[in-house]
Image (cartoon, rainbow, N blue to C red; front, side):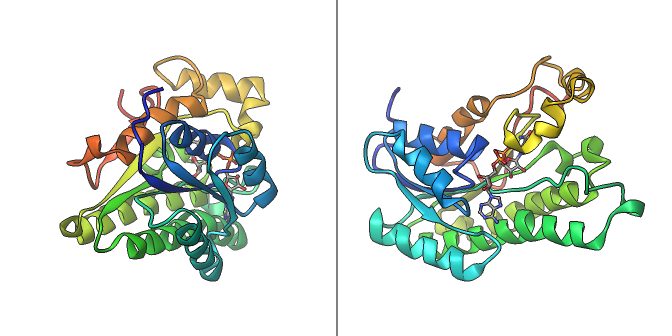
Length: 251
Ligand SMILES: NC(=O)c1ccc[n+]([C@@H]2O[C@H](COP(=O)([O-])OP(=O)(O)OC[C@H]3O[C@@H](n4cnc5c(N)ncnc54)[C@H](O)[C@@H]3O)[C@@H](O)[C@H]2O)c1
C-alpha cells in the first residue's frame, strides 16, 4: 500500500457496511485519518476496531440535520478539519420499491429521505467545513440514476438521479473555492444491500448478464477510484461521474 492519502482527514457515511466500510478502511490504510460515520454506531465501531491507528467511529443519521451537524462537530474535535467527505449511506427498499403505478408514497418518501435528502445534508455540512480551505466531496451514485437499469425501483432510481444532479450543481457553485464534488457509480456490487439479488440465483444471473465484464462487483472494486478522487491527483476533476460498473452503463 502506498499511503496516497497521508495527511488527509476524511469522513465516510455508511461506513459500517459494504462499500462505505471498504472505502473508509482503504482510506485509513492509505494514511488518512478517517471518521467512520453511520446510523449503526456499533457496526462503525466494529469496522474501526479492525484497524490499527487513529480511525474513529461516530453516530450519524444522514436524514437528521442535527445528527449530521453533531457528527461533523465530533469529527472536527477528534481529527481536525475535513479534507474529504464521502456521502455514501443509502437504502434500497427491495420488495417495496416498485414501478410507478404501484409505488406507495411512504416507500418513495423513505427512500428519498435517506438517499437524496441524506446526501444533501451530508454535502451541505461538508462544504461548510471545507470553505476557505478546499476539499473533495464524493457521492455514491448508481447505474439506476443514469439509464433504465432500475425500472422496477422508481424511488431508488429517482433518488440516485437526484444525487447526480446535486453533484453537478454543488460542483459548479464551489469550484472557485477549490471544493471538488464528484460522483462514483458502482455497478452491481455484492454487499448486504443487495442480498435480495445475490441470494436469488436467477436474479443474480440476470444482472451479471447485463454486466459486460461478466461478474458481480465487490466493495474492493470501488476503493481505487475513491482513493484517486480523495487525493490531490484528482486536482482537475470536478462535477464528473466516474463509473466502476463493469461496463453496465457504457457498453
Ligand atoms: N451494492 C450495490 O450494488 C450498489 C450499486 C450502486 C450503488 N450503491 C450505493 O452504494 C452505497 C452503499 O451501499 P452498500 O451496497 O455498501 O450498502 P450496505 O447496506 O452494505 O451499507 C449501507 C450503509 O448505510 C448505512 N445507512 C443507511 N441509512 C442510513 C442513515 N439514515 N444514516 C446513516 N447511515 C445510514 C447503513 O447502516 C449501512 O451501514 C449506497 O448509496 C448504495 O445506494 C450500491
